[in-house]
Amino acid sequence: MVVEEDTLLLIRRLALRNAVEHDGKAMVDKVTAKVIAVRPDLRSSVKVLIPTISAVVDEVNRLSIEEQRSSLEAIEPKERADGEHAERREQYATTLPQLPDAVMGSVVTRFPPEPNGYPHIGHAKAAIIDEEYARMYKGRFILRFDDTNPVKERREYYDAIMDGLRWLNVKPDLIKNTSDDIELLYRYAERLIEVDGAYVCTCKPDTIKRNRASSIECACRSLSRDEHMERWHKMFSEYRANQAILRFKGDMRSSNTVMRDPTLFRIIEHEHPLKGYRYRVWPTYDFAASIEDSIDGVTHALRSKEYELRNELYYAILDRLGLRKPIVLEFSRLEFEGMPVSKRMITPLIEKGLVNGWDDPRLPTLAALRRRGIKPEAIREFVLSLGFTKADTKPPFELLEAINRKMIDADATRLFMVRLDDCARVKVNRLDGVYADGTTVKIRNHPTNDALGSRIIKVRDEFYLPLSDVINAIGKEIRLIDLYNIMIERLEPSEGGYARAYAIFTGYEVKDVKKVQWVSVDDAVQITVLVPTHLYVDGAYNPKSLEIIHAYAESYAGRIGVGSIVQFVRFGFCRVDADGIFIMSHK
Image (cartoon, rainbow, N blue to C red):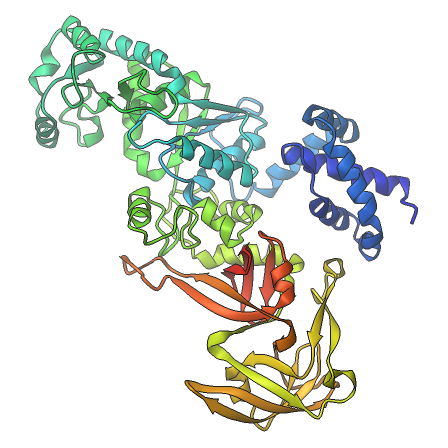
């Protein structure tokens, strides 16, 4: 087949775009799917096109990322990119309200995760909303690691956050660490002492806690600025942990307890994952976030509603220092019923072995959702469908499942599977032709998507069928899907219940009878399917939250690559997790 010039140009453009979006490596299957999506008329000839697509992808992958970008820009002029921005703004106009005082081209947002665990669905919501607003206004989006508590932070968590954002296709314009600005934050702390906005307190932690609760000022507060500056310097050398903290000079009688002289810096003698033991005096989030947002040029600081009472402190710090103030906006937290997002709840589960790590499919972490077979595009659509609101909400996980199902349905291979705990071995008699001696049948992998091809199954006269279907079909005719019709004659009991059944062949004609999935005994492999359910029920850990199902499946199931999504007929969508291991995504 001679590929027309415009088709070849389309393939090259889509291959370049796929490469640029995936760190320089285009993928044949992704490019093929895009070609069909853009040119549905090419679906019937896609098999003939694949060698051309493969050749173009190979050529593109040999280019450097800079060459890929420049080549893509030559094919896709700037006007097209501007059109995409406009289309994106229009698409989400109904779910994301306009930002107050936003100026096109000048909006700067930031996502400041602490690297103290793996990112979860709540982080996804924050990152996606921040990025979407930056793109809507053609502004900048900053990823800033809030890494100022070395006790809780690990290098592993920085990498996990980056990996999660790459998977979500969230692309920051700038990546930085708060710990890189620690010296600058020290200078702002000293300025705050100089303007009588902060003081060093050497009271015991219990005394500080009691005084704050009772609105009592401690004696440290009345010392001179010089004395506080001297104490500040001692925090770097003489004082030990819990012997001194830098506190904001707020209002100890404020009804907002956040303003009762909160901690701004404390001594933490612990190795930092990036800085080692270079620093021992670390800022709290309240201090670091306000300063960093101001100096980074953030125009709109978007954060979850749990920080709402801390806004007064955020602005008070900037006022005392005479720094520019961003606009702070809050949105509701995102979590699912029965799936905790709090690291305070997840970490003990991991430590006790109640879940198998941060990617356990019962968790709402991005690693777990990815392993479960949830597409990143589904998460983005789900987040944006919820809009930008402060109203508390716990959307059902089924809503995300519905969005994901819509996205994977057309590309998921359909396969047959029979559970071992609901299985009967059925022998079919009176078979005519080749079926009696054994043969092969060809079955389409998808009822409507021809691009998924077909598979060959060995069949003879014995099958694994769902026992529940067999019991209900004694004396009745049923159809083995995509094969032929049989009538169940009898069941023979075995230890533990019925396990053997006998049937007779009744013809090939498609009739209005019950259709049953089947696995040929000559073409069967054993698989394991993990089925995650609610991790918590009524606030308590659910020990039955992970069901393990053993089943027979077609041998084709053992040849599908890890990460692929299949749909087991009358069971659900599953992702291949390892050889012979599947994780159920959803119905």
